Length: 203
Image (tube, rainbow, N blue to C red):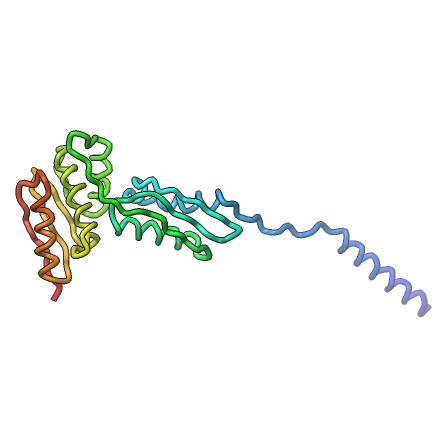
């Protein structure tokens, strides 16, 4: 009787082992491809009207856990935003910043309606006001680009309104020198009729 019980236990154990060993292996989580990572970052970039207009290239290398951003933008603030978006989308990846900052300087006769549309989208996103004329959009593009390229003027903190070729500067700056310099940059921009300096110096 004892041998029968032992045999039954052994047989049961054998059946359990066979059932477990014949069960299909649990599938591993699908590995992200380079294009998956690139698409995820591009989708986040496209959520922002200003960043969407940059057309920056995104190249991912999943094996090296790195992402490279390349292209040209018109301000340091935009470059910083792009890098931050890439880092927050893929926290475990190293972001290689190969973006060049080159202020846009296009003569009025070569400034297109498409460029004006992009300028208006950027202005709206930043809470800035633009007149309906092509020249107002052109002046906004030139002034904001020049402020971004000037080390004294914190372009990301200065709002630029352009209506009827009159430029209004709003926002907070760190010093009276920054306020004066911002007004000078705007005033010396070709085509600007007048500058209203409403910048406030932080106390």
